[in-house]
Length: 219
Image (tube, rainbow, N blue to C red; front, side, top):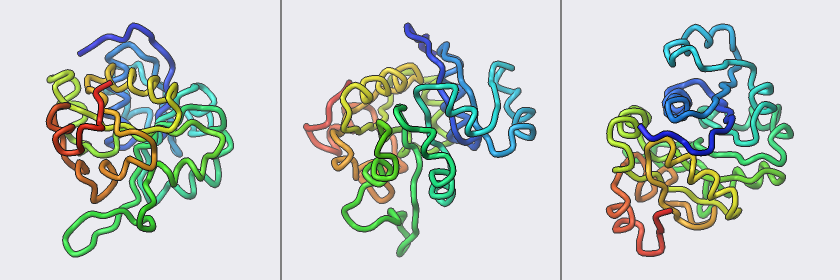
């Protein structure tokens, strides 16, 4: 498991499988992680298994505690969360790991309008935040094991319009034991959305570039 050379405080909004896995990877690498939950008292006991280092507070308190915030809530809960707490994300780097899913003719697909990527949708909802799309395409049960036990063999696709925010998140991806592969801007990120070429799949960085194309770059 890699150790970070630049520890920071990161907020994780959502204490389900995705939030717990990524938060645990960041804790192991040396970051401070503040989990935001609608029911922090109930979740605190569950998260003690992360070594007692996990801080569990309300979602608003977690957002206020960090400049980088991972959104890892179910797709059906995103609208209500942003309606209530979206202003608290202004000025922050927001890692969007959410998916608005639908199931059509035996296939997972995005529930958004055709041509609209999940990252662009999030950026429209959070115009004062620096949105980076990441951690949304790998099955949740693989996030911890591949990152912790096979560090840097496997790729996480990321996309953002803000170059500095993208580099911040790329470093956090590397600290989690994964290798970031840059797909470009938010409008270029359909491959990692539901129904996209890499959704619910995982690849080595070279394999991912073979699937997506030479424009994808290892960061």
